[in-house]
Length: 512
Image (cartoon, rainbow, N blue to C red; front, side, top):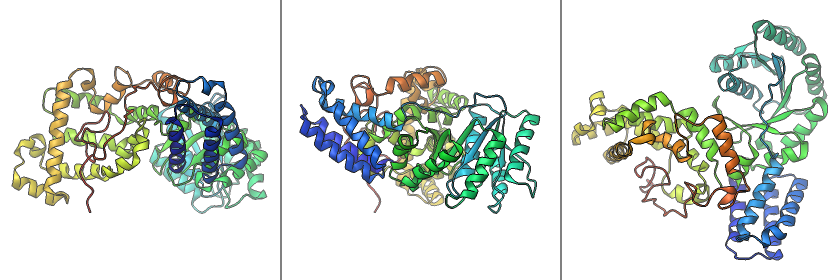
């Protein structure tokens, strides 16, 4: 969502960083460019004015003049003010109330309300270990209740049985009673939406709120609607009093203006970001981390969180033990490829590494394509179990058969086998702690974690360490932080930072 804004701001701030000393005129010119970039990103005009004025006041002050690297100091100021605009601190869903805690989901039709309800219920069940009940109060949209029931089965969360003919308020009261009797911790109430704001919608939502006294009232807003999302938030807040916002379609091509304006205009925190159609495509909204992504500083905390979720520690230990013994076969490689795909693929991982976001053109020229994972897995699936256990059996005729079966070429099979040999050799030589948990767990090792994986306390500590304000690299990162390259040649002959040289999708010319 922030790609265009990130490119624009990155270019403007890079010009400042190249200058030894900054004059007031330099800063003024840069702020005019920043103002233009924010307006193009559909950020509310009042927010743009306030943001650029605050940055300019700090950037022409003593803290920049006395700084050893004025350009870097301006980047830090822009980062700090972005964080302030986005809401300073992460504000997760609050469940600190007597059970069952009612959560009221409101919003316009088509914003992703029902899907977001199921995503949040899944998150609270799996991460928060809460017993959740979902109830659809949408009596108007055809099959709305059936949709929530289907999603409930998909995410393994209970839904309130459907009783025809009841009003939204009656269903809400029945849901609260059922949650009390069933010993549920949380009850999620998915209200009806309308195509546009109208009095009937607001009256129904207000009536449901009065009947259930929800602890959280979450507005689900579509980030692709830009400033319309902000206007919707203001309207709902004035009638029912919002406690937070869930911004959906953050993976779309919206320009990011809604996210940047929402907190400043409404005063309500963005609590969650919907980043895709899958039921686990939901992220906590952390202003520090979002500001880091906008300025191309990466988001290593999110990367480690994804690794912690995707990596099956026990399975990885077995794989790593086989690596150390030199018995790492192609079945094990397939498992590693599938785990990386679950973490978002190479494109998703690269976007979170500090410094790499600014090299999109080079990455694109390196043919960084997530479809490579599927092709590599297809190649391995086309082998016999015996061939997967003993790749040395693969002679020319067997390779031709596998290429035919997987719809690939013999050259691709050779590249896969070469990558397998490299990974096996590297992991066998590493032995030690990094090897014990498989190659992906090296990510946690890079961050200084031991044991199985990062705990919530470790993640919190890392977030604080990475917050803007520290000396050295961008956004408080030390200058020698892993993954902050000084620049990469277009074909990446040495491999990307922290990734094996033979990783699929790196290097090789694009197919015509």
